Image (tube, rainbow, N blue to C red; front, side, top):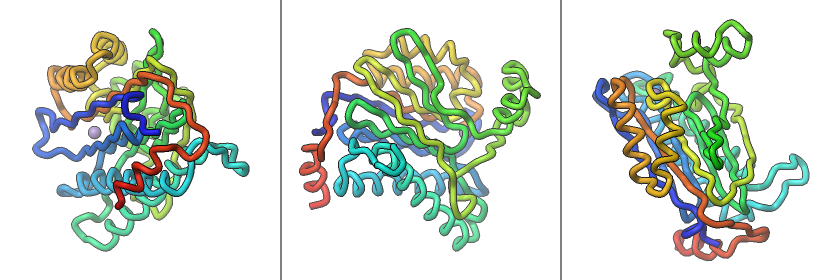
Amino acid sequence: MSLRGKLEMAGSSDVGLKRNHNEDSIGSDAGMGLAVLADGMGGYRAGEVASAIAIRVVMEELRKALVRNAPAELDEETGYAHGTLMVQNAMAKANQVIFQTAKSQPQCKGMGTTLTAALFFDNQMAVGHVGDSRLYRLRNDEFEQLTVDHSLVQELTDKGFYSPEDAKRSIQKNLVTRAMGVESQVRSDLYQEDALPGDVFLLCSDGLTDLVEDRQIHLTLNKYSANLEQAAQQLIQLANQSGGTDNISVIVGRVLKPFSGKGRPSWYSEVVNWFG
Ligand SMILES: [Mn+2]
């Protein structure tokens, strides 16, 4: 089962107005049901190396894993679907590659990246998450942030030191407390959610959410949900109109039809063909 015709996606990444290069990276494959977004950090251009590695490795690892295993099958030990564990494993591998590269190449020392990945299978969505990029879901008229930032601001808010208003004004907004590639191992947050026809998903970097209010993002997704390309462009434009102080990346997805499939999906053969 290819998810083509059942799921649509559009993504865009923009340098913004103040930076001279783009350290965000995105990747998506609607047929495979995969969207990945990363916001890199590090010295001279190392951030873009880290985010590019994250996207490449996660996509490669998931392509391979989906050939070997049916994502909808349940893992007895953990209670997660295989697809969710595949996301976790792919992220662990990406972490390793970034960490090793940072260690072996002086110009990449200390680099890291956020990563938010969503894999769709069997009317579900598995999300893996590290850092302060986000995943939102618009279902009917309910707009909800599904991931929780790994940031100092979020921690202070959780502990009650910050109100949401304080958080917005904080100068430490971009201090990430967990990132990919910084240590030899990383703990990814995992979410397994159902995906219903009509659901709209947004993966985005902080270049959007620091400048554009959730309410505004919600309105934009509502307005352009029938045209995801336009939705993506519109969101980037909103961030740039508000100053464009950081790189801005978005991937917008929409579930068109149910995509159930328990066994090894029939798109298995299609994937095998890609690898020839
Ligand atoms: Mn950023």
